[in-house]
Length: 157
Image 1 (spheres, rainbow, N blue to C red):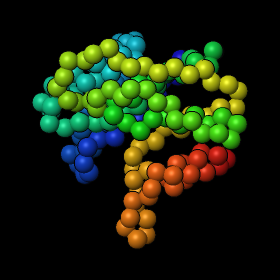
Image 2: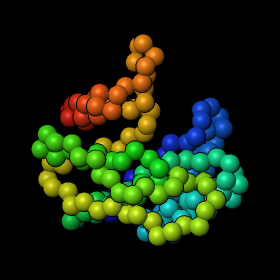
Image 3: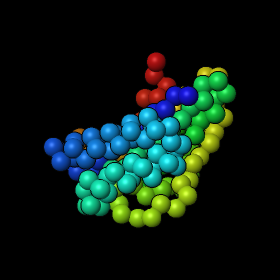
Image 4: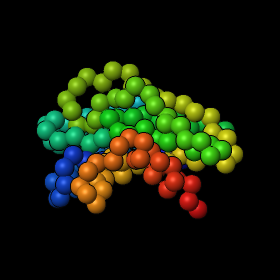
């Protein structure tokens, strides 16, 4: 089982770095405890709330890949969805997003997505820094331009 996650802390600078570090440490602790994705989401959220009292949050995508079957599972905590790259097509792997980590809330059953990967498939995990990067003129890209850039970058070898 391969387990991957991407975290994106609110803000910039040292405070954001500390916020992200707490999230990564809590995530690693949950993995060592062999929790499933929903349990990892709940445990990481609980640690974030304990550390920051609900004042700072982190978006994340938590993933599992069963390398023997190709089953890919993910949980979206307010983060851009993973992109599935299959036969020159790009598909956003979307589920109903869960709330970002660090907000004081009762955890409902987390929404875990599932996709069966095929040989040659790629999955791209990224942050909103890629899709919200400003152009030379200071303008944000439109959705299509951002998606095309992601698609082109993902197919580079």
